[in-house]
Image (tube, rainbow, N blue to C red; front, side, top):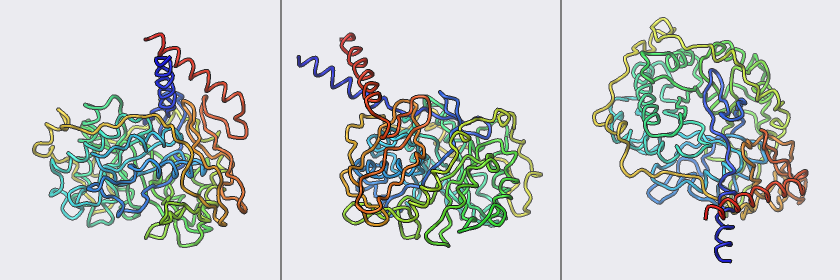
Length: 481
């Protein structure tokens, strides 16, 4: 009997940990699910609760170290309809397995920045050659080691807004590509799958087209080009239009892109509360050249953005911004988002050449710096004693902290809905904020052939499916014994 119980416990753990999204790869202009071959259109949010000040690796704290906080926020974002988050500041040595597994179970992908605000942990835009060294890459490679084994790791940002005017576009482009080259070669040598690496650019129109052209062009097969291009864009404010926001210019600029492009930040806050009318345009046919975007940002911080307020006692209050965004997300035509465009694969990046660059002050030097001293050994042999994350069982699903709607009503019985295999989270038509002190909203839906139904339709059929898979795993374990 004890052996049976042990077998049952192991099978249960295997079952919980097996609920995983599929890895995604780049195909032409799109992110594509490697199993279902459906396009992943990013419906996301930027996630850095507590802001940069909450990044405290010396105290064992970053955005993905507290499982209770991650469970709370994953459940809140799952009901919003989010399928991807961007996390800016994480430590390469801390354990992120619980948090990443929670987001994985929720059907949410992660885009991870390899840099941090601490000295020596990012490229110094004023003198990039001073920070491109083995100590810097040791840390960046540690981030890859930490997250490479998670199927919901969508990609890594090599840098963020290093160039923000023409003066910073003289030397930085080469060094950003050097970092991309080194990250991609490290992944090639030490990861079991290809994980995309890209750049997050500022929406500064005097350098934007040149930045994109420089980052995506092909150069001697040296692997230094971006696999994707993120754009931090705040040009659509309030009740703007496709034309007045300049979105039409972005579509025209990027129409022949050879790599995926998406908004790595968006959500102008000049009009409050934000109405997010840009969502309709972003997920329409006229902007299909882009792969969606990430709203800045999940939690209300000093920059005066936010979808929720995280209170001092750990409770969360949804803001009107959350409700407005959820309403916009619910109107996205999901069926039109997952179809791939096979023609985009045939678009190839042009060879790097000075003729691609339009601004006189923007760099036309495509000679990428040599690998920094001591760095090739790290790339070839790997860093010593890496901290490798891995999926773990998600057994706790009920949110312990209190969560309140925008009108103050408490959301009752908030739980994470663990999606079945291949399940990617998506907007499910819910209204999360209660009108008063009502019950919580229905669980979100997921896309894909095996996505979990909404809570209102779960019923006995879903319980039977879960039980069947659990007992199959149990029988497998017993047979192996």
